[in-house]
Amino acid sequence: MNSSRRTTLSRLLWGAAGVVALPVAYVAARFLRPPVTEPARCVAGSIEKIRSQPTTLVRVGLNDAVVQPMPDGTLRAISLRCTHTGCPVRWVDASREFHCSCHGGRFDSDGRVIAGPPPRPLQRLRVEQSGGNVIVIDEPPSDEPPSA
Ligand code: FES
View 1 (cartoon, helix red, strand yellow):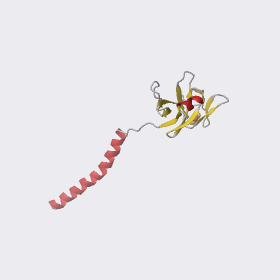
View 2: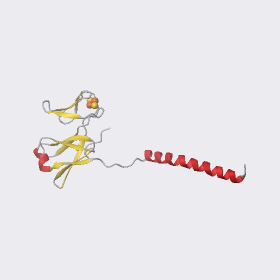
View 3: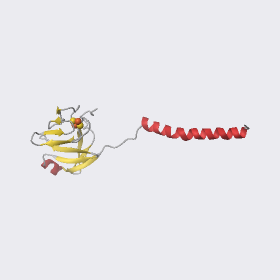
View 4: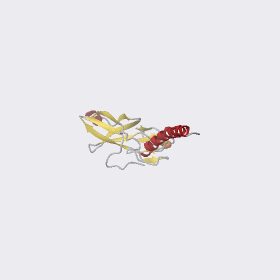
């Protein structure tokens, strides 16, 4: 093999290695440093309307949540996604509980587990008021540690 053919073959091999290595390096970089995603948010409605109703159902990103005015004047939002395997939970007015039909999980009106397999309470979502509206953000309130 003459040196010209050897050089050409070497360049081809290095080029092929580069074609394979670049996507692998890209995937590794994305794995090590995933893109920052903004939390989902929605406008639940006007402050007056939210305060005038016992509960308001809202859609935040891919999940439902309920917004409730509290006796102390604050507003709270509770995710309606079960903490067991993520099934939707629903409010049962008669028992004043949240029920999950997937595996029988039950939560009290504050979202604490009272029966079934869910490992954690229902997640609280951050509530803000802006421009006369109530905004619900799919991340824990600042005074609540994120649930694992
Ligand atoms: S997903 Fe709710 S109890 Fe299993």
